[in-house]
Length: 164
View 1 (cartoon, rainbow, N blue to C red):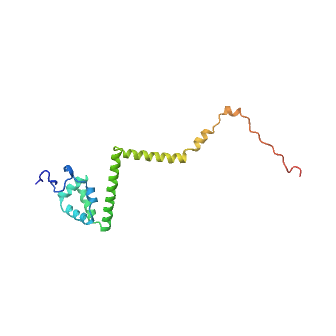
View 2 (cartoon, rainbow, N blue to C red):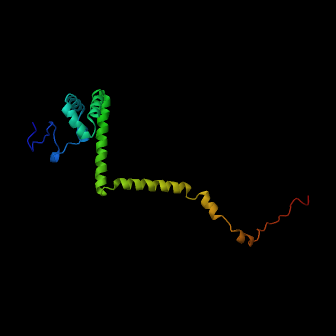
View 3 (cartoon, rainbow, N blue to C red):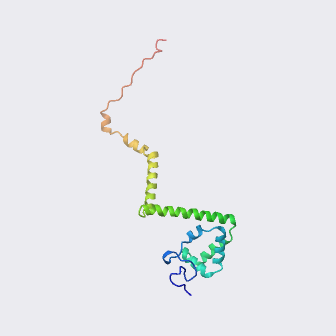
């Protein structure tokens, strides 16, 4: 039977977030320790309804969710710790990105791309800004004006060994 309105749970038995929304699975996983994660995986894996709910929360198919649960369930403790650490770190990075994006009105990606393009342009200008093509274009002499320029005078040096 469905839970009464305002009870904070969904019809499938999971906790609902603020405003009745599903909780963010990445946030849930980032706040778990190894024992809690193993217990949750066992509980979800044994309950097809929970697999369906978890699949809807992650935006994947129930088959993909089942495969992901099997992968996590068969991990050894060292790899599980590494995965939890990675999830926590990525969750913090996502939070920092979201805060920065909010500060610039949702245009952080555009600013990062623009900054990257400016950096690449500066590097290219540094290495190729005075390219040989630009120098060659600057050294081209008009043939008509070249005819009016007298040839350079070459100094004549007397041979100092002439008398010997």
